[in-house]
Length: 196
Image (cartoon, rainbow, N blue to C red; front, side, top):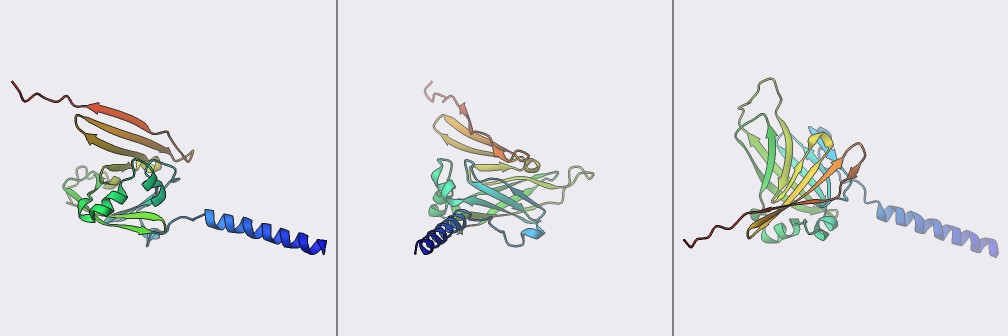
């Protein structure tokens, strides 16, 4: 009888461990046609925006944020953007070596515990330097910006109000697979007196 009890407890313990591993390892979010992307930038999601990855295609950029992290941080703003309506969101895609580019937010979806932001972009074929390629060097939504820097990502988020602007910056070291602490920069704009 004691051997049966030990086997039962061992089986129960293994089941609990396997359930914990399965439940806690949400796995990487797979973007549709990701294998056809021009670039895929991955990072750990323990950053101020919950960024997990940015996938760059020929005509769009898809950015994936962990929803719970994005909602929890004071920098997380996608929930508010969704509440106000997608028409209130604005997106941007930064391109090198071209002029006349435009971008917009196609969608902000909630899928598998993540915000999936799709930005479309286009540009005129006015190449500044014909010997250099056109590359997507960054993207963002609303006041959040991501600079790709060949995988050494830089996040920034700005809050403006009254006579000051606060800019929060965090960088990712791809080689070390680690985020820096969030740094805050504050800019004051002296208010001009309208009374003379």
